[in-house]
Length: 153
Picture 1: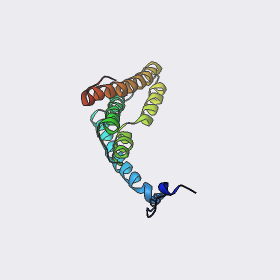
Picture 2: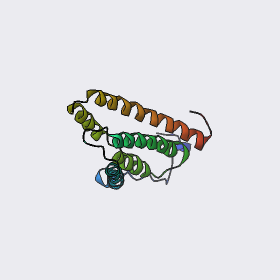
Picture 3: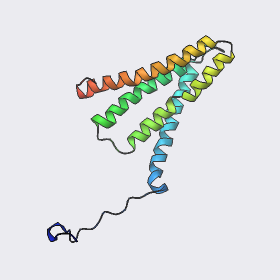
Picture 4: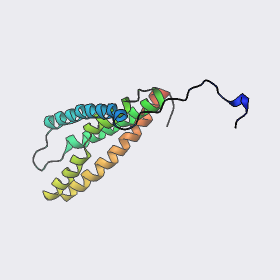
């Protein structure tokens, strides 16, 4: 039993939070909508910048690097700068940028280059994409912190 001065009389407990499909439906919907937008943007970029047969997949490389840079900026904005709506991060991060970047095509491109007798290009593409994507996230995050928060990382 608690002391009388610590008891709360007449205060109702908070209603239980929704769980299951009803709670997740809005998240699934915004991820799907964002993914459709991001994938459409990526597809348009690959149509505009098609490599020749057996050529280096520059469009995929720059799509992944620019998407990673955008993710770095987005994460600073939604975690440090804005009080973002709960659906903004799933829409932009998982949806739009997840649909825009294409690490599955990256893997297929590596296999295609190696299968076309260009193992050096395949290995270079593997390493350059990985290093450039990681550097893009880090540099974009640092730049966003400096621009939006006025501080160094």
